[in-house]
Length: 423
Image 1 (cartoon, rainbow, N blue to C red):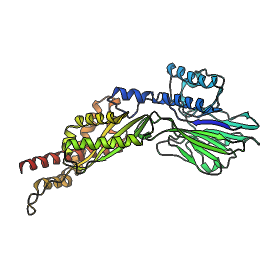
Image 2: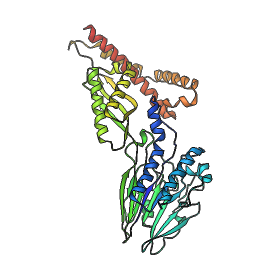
Image 3: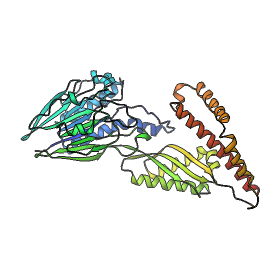
Image 4: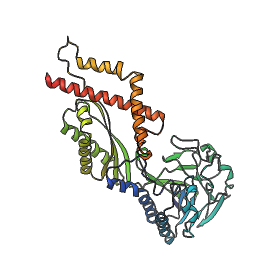
């Protein structure tokens, strides 16, 4: 008789909206509730597939979470599984170790939360024995590998290990319980249910090692559809893994090259076409798009001048695409080159543009002056309103460069348009 389970991790329940400065309250509500809805979908999947267990490989919570509303919600979902005879095996990750609910919440007896000391739970399914091994973070930091602390695989059983680990490290993730994938394959465990890294990865090798990624993205840096693993352990010990969609909202970057587009209606139609194409590719219920316009266009100045109007037009086209939202509109535009009216005569607007690029905006003195202005503005703002300029010196420098580039392009676009009207 096969043993079947769902493997997930990194739900980060009630994670606060981080990079979303959402103008749309409905969108803020959708994203704010999406992590909860992902858990509901996972429980629904467990019930539909009639699995034997749900494995949560850490970071069910998002840190120092004290909301009893979250506690009641979680308890209700675990009770649904308990009533269906589905066991839950959970370890604490680095975020869970910070949570007060982790220590205080009373869950059904069908929920096994592994402690900071390695344990193994044996289950019998027909004539098959399954041993589930787990080890939780006792503290938010785990600078050393946890693998040596796991109990030895039980002979004659299918051994499943649950670990929260950064493996050999990944961009955007701190080092937690680091270990080598090769060591996991050589450990004698048949399946490793990992957590911590938010991108799904199947680490190929002798055994089955899965980092499921998170079941719901929270911002544009966690773009793409999100899933869980449905795992079947056959009577012969074989392991089959199926990926199942869980994300309610899917973040995506949508880039539109508007080079050659010269009228506003054509621009809006082009945006609409791009959003509809991305919506068609999106399997999740909602598409949350970061729209980025690129290219050289005579509309560059008008777009920057009437930015709010274009954003409204884009949001309307998103509505027409169906369950599509604009999270942010970014511009990387430059003005189309001015038309040369006389091949023998130098274009004064182009000459001015060259002068600005080479002598004015490129000078250290001018750049420092702009930087000082930005820093002065930041000093006058409350801390929660300062993130638009980045979180460190390098990001601030990049923001200053963007201001200088965009400002010079705006000026050149305006001068070019005026020159064309006068000709």
